[in-house]
Figure 1 (spheres, helix red, strand yellow):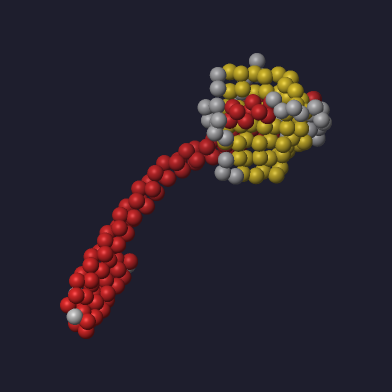
Figure 2: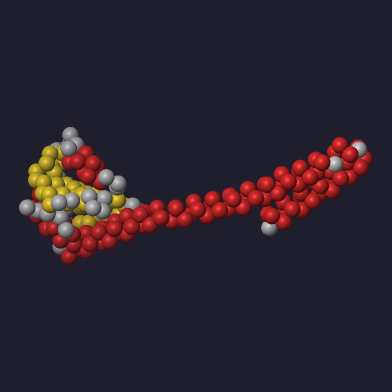
Length: 198
């Protein structure tokens, strides 16, 4: 549709230029040809732009695959964690899913947990930062290849937090506000998800 509009505009410009050249003499007669050539170049440029847009779209499609893979991994692993908590007698509520993060609460009458699974490029750095925070102390840490799990105690409210990182998929796990009597249960659930505990 745009190309027909450009051709029509070029034709009108040429016609207007020819009419002016008759009225003003022959020196103006070459301008409409130049304007028509410029209009043709604009038309060719728009065709090139369409090609560029297509190429850009194709390359973006590749990056969306990575984004989709990250969000799929988050969803899949959050579901495994959620199911493990349910199997252990926790009730899950306030489930929220975003593109790269899933969070929910879980309670068993003892602990009221907040759980979070997030896709973060270079998740190991975030894991290290959280476990080395000044407000917590590391009680235990377990590593097996690309996966690590850390049990930290919150110094302010004396509850526990379990952090997990999977470097292969860049997933960061964070379960907080765990009471001491539930720490073994939550560790066991993390082992079922695939984390080391020895």
